[in-house]
Length: 448
Image 1 (cartoon, rainbow, N blue to C red):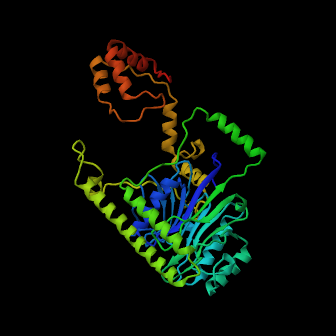
Image 2: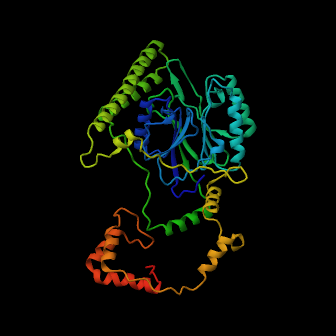
């Protein structure tokens, strides 16, 4: 897991059932509850790519097909590295060692367990979290019954010794009109077990048949780590603090807030009714109707907001996001992934990947590796120059170059922008030109 200076990370898990309404509901909850990492099964897809997720968040999926697992990170200070060799359409593994797994109930669980075994072997000794839609039932994780998939997963857990941290709860991780079960699991390695706090099944409506799981990762540092943290804190006192991105759903209305609260209240009322079957069934129907209306209202508000956005282009910028979407010119955030090494194997972590990139892009300048061409170039650079001096710059030439600078280009190491250069030249044009000529004549360029 990446080293962090803040004391905890807020996490959640949810299966969105490829629902657009559930996706929008999740984003609003991530904003209001300041959730930093969310593990998602069955994300909402369009053309086999996750859609509806705020562009400022990082979304990790794998494969060109139908992805059934994703990890969403909203906090810029969390460094995540995508390990591709252990990821597929049903599994996502990041270097912060939070594994994310979807197990299809239609497929044999054996293949899924083999993938998990490889991940455990690869991350041996590291802090590992696996957010899993297992489609396996067992009384060990507080379900009402145990099926064959549950028995096989029980044996896997017993032999490999990870920990299932699901706790007994009046709520179930999966609940539909056909019944309920606890098939949604949080499995962790021994090294991070003590860091997981406040695991619970959320009371908030998920707009899906799967309830949201929530927990916090708290970092318990020893004395040495505390001293290191203090030193780093002192070094960074004057640096601006990074914040978790707070991006609410812009079209979320007060009416939707009221509907979500009413749906939550009806669900709690239904779940608390246990002794009267007729009353329980009646309240269950009321909850189902309210949930369906809530999902429809989300889709309607989203559609109306998008139509309004598309029909109200900016008069000052016709090339806005609507034009970019229509012309296919939108850019996705780059994902840092593992790379293939010259021997055919793949890098295992971020350090190894960056080292490989440096070796390939900036190879060591070793004279022993020079070709005849490189040897000649090296010899010429070491020879003194006896050519005549170049002609001096004229004031008009300096003015044309400075005025041609683009205003939005990044400055060099000295931090001087093109706007500053233009102001200086306009103020003292007769002094600026001799400075450039003297730099050229002496071959000296000041560093500050």
